[in-house]
Picture: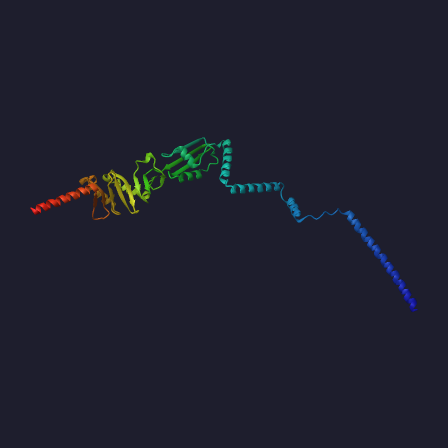
Length: 329
């Protein structure tokens, strides 16, 4: 019984295992068939792109057309700009651009055909145009009137300027020139100055030789008031050759005869009045003296020339001898 029962169970188990294996094989075959059909139904899968190519693909999809060409051109322009800056050709490049746009404007009918300049006395028309940076290539369309005015006012000869453009081709420039006031000598160097002390010329041309001569540090800025005061006393001014500022405090007046007058620091007008009266009454400036010292308020001191001093000493000695002989007698 037991043996027959165990045998029956073993047989049933064997059949069950065989059936399960058959079912498993059938399911596996079915799954393989379904996978095969899916592979045939869908397109072949592409190889996964690299991350960088994926980014490029996205950019190509969303960015406008030709942006790559524009970006390349921008890179080339940037490289060219760096080369211009490092090579020190910025000014040349800017000038070339200005010439190009001015040439285009001139072809369009905006060439400067007429220039009217008013107020010039010392400067020539060519000098004024050169100072303003206006050349034969300049066009009225791209001419910066404010920049031209600033360039003109930066010149020491020009106190003020007005620049007007009248299209299509007329330019008007009105200037106010400074007047040459004096020759200024400092540390052995001579220049021409205006009445406010501005240096107009770093040298003295022949046409400026008749200007008054002022000497010393700070004399350029202060000479206007002092010379105006001197001119109120023609007895002194008519014989003045130069004025020198001493210690930036007071003035010395040099006459054409070589006589130097040391003026006081204060009450200069009273000192000039006294000098004028002394010269008028006693011919003070014509005497054989080399200096007049008026620095002390309560006295006037004169210095004789060497010849006059020697003659005076001889005269005094002669008087002493005469008095001695008279006493002995």
